Amino acid sequence: MQISGKVFLVTGSASGLGEATARMFVARGAKVVLADVNSVGEALAGELGTSAHFIRTDVTLEADGAAAVAAACERFGALHGLVNCAGIAPSERIVGRSGPHSLEGFARTISINLVGTFNMLRLAAAAMLLNELLSDGERGVIVNTASIAAFEGQIGQAAYAASKAGVAALTLPAARELARSGIRVVTIAPGLFMTPMTAAFPVAVQQSLAQAVPFPARLGQPEEYAALVAAVCEIAMLNGEIIRLDGALRMAPK
Ligand SMILES: NC(=O)c1ccc[n+]([C@@H]2O[C@H](COP(=O)([O-])OP(=O)(O)OC[C@H]3O[C@@H](n4cnc5c(N)ncnc54)[C@H](O)[C@@H]3O)[C@@H](O)[C@H]2O)c1
Image (cartoon, rainbow, N blue to C red; front, side):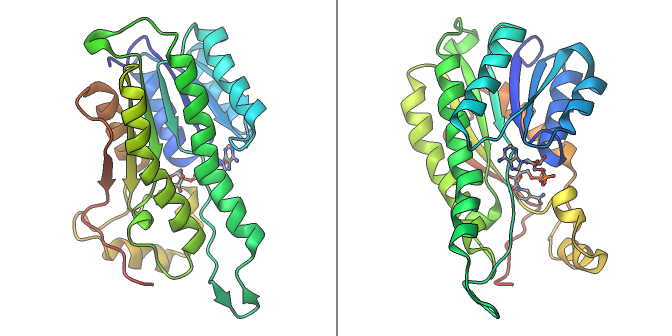
């Protein structure tokens, strides 16, 4: 799918990987709806100009998801792509010093990272079915964000790893079902990226994380994630796949 002239919805676009993705789409001539629970996305949309529109969205809520998809269709005429970046990364041991893992915390992580991803995917796919066929018989593309924690979750990442493994497992059945409608589904599994999520770690922790990456031995830049999203949009043969973007990092137990 050519990016220029198309309409994309990016969740979690007020920050980090989602923000870089929204910037990439506008720079490449697309229209973007920025959907985030954090209203600072409003200022980013203002900076990006008339090609961008912010709508406050909690991806776990049916009505918010529907309103975000409707905003794309009503404001820009259609929805061709969804990039699911909204997420949280809490850390908690299954049995910590203060007792067992909070059940509410586990459920919240699954709700935002997995249920939220599915909520947006199903609503976006329904809107994409209305699109005219593009080249290659394509109607839309959906990019989810898992994590390498889906495969090598560390101690303290039980909830996060489980949520991201769910996103990874969702990829193939979604791609298979939506194939007949010309909608592709691809998931990116990032390693360690320099975003507000990781910038909150102490510098010493950031440095030790960076040194664990075989090559290049640094945290990824959000623009590198956005460049992969662009490639996924443009390469129609990419479908039903989980792509690691991690500098060959394989996470240790802790
Ligand atoms: N940064 C990394 O190293 C890294 C690595 C692997 C995977 N990821 C994943 O990439 C995605 C983006 O992470 P990031 O590093 O850009 O984080 P970030 O914290 O910078 O951005 C996440 C955004 O999601 C939004 N969000 C949270 N809950 C939401 C909700 N219920 N509804 C709508 N928006 C919500 C936040 O407001 C925020 O703007 C996440 O899913 C994260 O798990 C990040």
